[in-house]
Length: 80
Image (cartoon, rainbow, N blue to C red; front, side, top):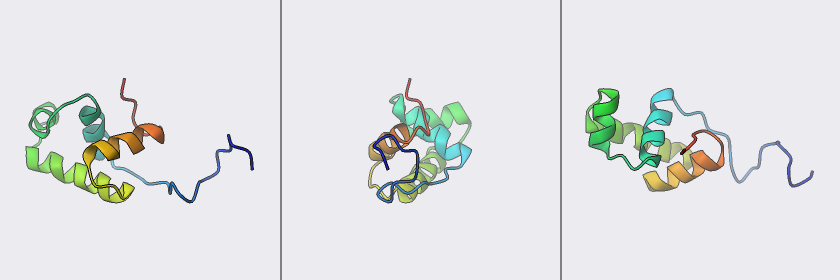
């Protein structure tokens, strides 16, 4: 298998994020707070936190910033 193979890497299992989890990670990547994201998506800040916590759990990371980094690396979100 070459370095550019598209097959799954066991160190990076594929995860399935909900559209809301993806949206919350996207806005987090742009520097938005939970309150800001809640206003943008018409959600409470606690609901935003819940989506971000679920994304962190799926990626097996501790912080929302780590989750953003994994999502960008895996092409799930585009930070630009």
